[in-house]
Image (cartoon, rainbow, N blue to C red; front, side, top):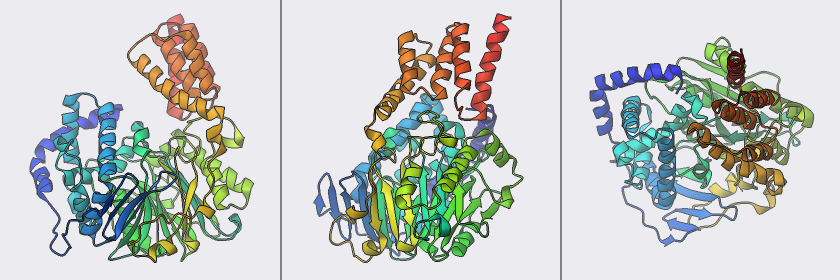
Length: 555
């Protein structure tokens, strides 16, 4: 935790003690089911790759993506989704909370975290629309009992819907760093709207193993698709049958003292009920949120895209006239945030502006993009001017950790979703018009093989194999440094050779030698790190700080 968070933790715990009555009330609140069909769905077919219930099924395609097709009222959508995805839901919950336990290994601190989460979320139920709470309640009937100490399944699931928001508020958890692009007119091969994005929410490799492409046909509102995971009702990337798309990009936020509307629920409501950009803006403007976020909205009706920038105390829309490209990373661009100190600091110190500049560079070089060229953009691992900056560098559009990449052609109702590893596997194509003209009574995949975008050849190279080996070694090196354990010199050198253009390998080497009081070797490693593309200004300052310490020790 940063110093700022250390200061705020006692305030949160004090507020928790003062707000215990409010917490108890929030934990007692349950959605009303009176108007909904409460029949519990039964699986009529259940194998490892196909599960079927009434007008809903779950199918694993040949790219190992799970396709969920479901229809009904909110409670039935929740129940059917839960019944079909129970194993995926329980695994996802286990993986996510295991990551939390990795961050916070102390049982005492875990208990404090639970209390803090309950305090954070004490009024969450007031901000989530009733129909989505009902869906979450139905889904939560299929949760695991393993984490009952965190609360009952329903409220635990509500908390998880705020995890994206809390994760990027505490940015040093490195959960997010997304990039997205919308182009149309002169910037696309067919003149139509084309949108691509990487969703770089990282909560461990296992969290991204089982991606679900949900095709949802609710009783009210638009049918829509989204890329999601077990237990998730909110939306981070999706398109509806009206040709409206939403994708989320985190912005810089203050540490929130109280959860309000999770941004994924805002996106879900827009996706289900908006047909145009104006409708999406009107819906977002009514919401109270607890973190700052960019929502890139594309519209087949409007034939363009804008960025809705929403925060706890601010709201803006980035809609430049006479342009045919909108780029979105992790900072705000509208006039409403022009003087926002946190946003200005984000631009100066983070890797957000660098990725924005890289997208602009590619758009200007390519002139006209197609779905295939958009996939190539999302997979790009190089820096500006095609500089090699090391694999996994957060300044790259492809940080080799994305949960998914996704591409939309809204006017054609076509969408492509990436398969593992990262966004390097084949992008699988779907036509929403074809999918939602059916009743989901016949269980089959609606993937369009003829439109599939091929996997990236990079995954068959030695460089990719070295990168995967680097990730394993990086975790081990980090563990050894943290625990002040010895590392063989040859192993350090081999570690560097696995990813030689990445500044981090030299920084970690320098840190090891510094702790071992081998200051000359530490100095050489730190200086070498500075010759590479260091991810953030703060990281660069950290390296300079160690070099100054070494100079003081020598003097």
